[in-house]
Length: 200
Image 1 (cartoon, rainbow, N blue to C red):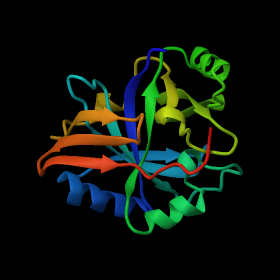
Image 2: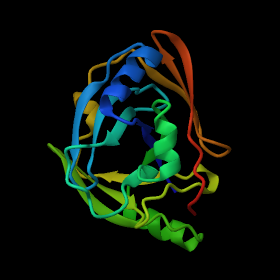
Image 3: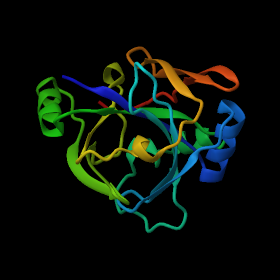
């Protein structure tokens, strides 16, 4: 199935901790994102587009303390005690999201391979709208480092309004443990993901 790296998900205990981590580790300040009413989360964004990874960005995400609880498990394992305990030690790469041309076809194909990536859910923030796969339990897929698939609606994409950050995604590996190498003002930085302990 055709898919491209859309964004990397770095989780933080609070957005302020995520902002400080970005400035300390990557040497740049992230841009304001917004709130996800559907999930009770909010985010900051950083353009990490590169020739091999067009329209790619880094999302720093945290549970929004001012949001109404979503009444369901939040995405990316954010409600899992093990993840919350790890984030007390500082922000970390948590997962990745892949752009697909047809979310329904992707989910059907994966289901045929025995992989339950969840259901297609519509979401929006500002002038952006998308369809994304969500499992009822909010868990990340761990089989072969599979991502959360996303299908953007229309032409709008977060990178369209993000300024050049001076950070580029150099390489990305998901099959044997999620890791990413970034070119930054502080040199090459490697991020290693928090392992998923459960999931398909």
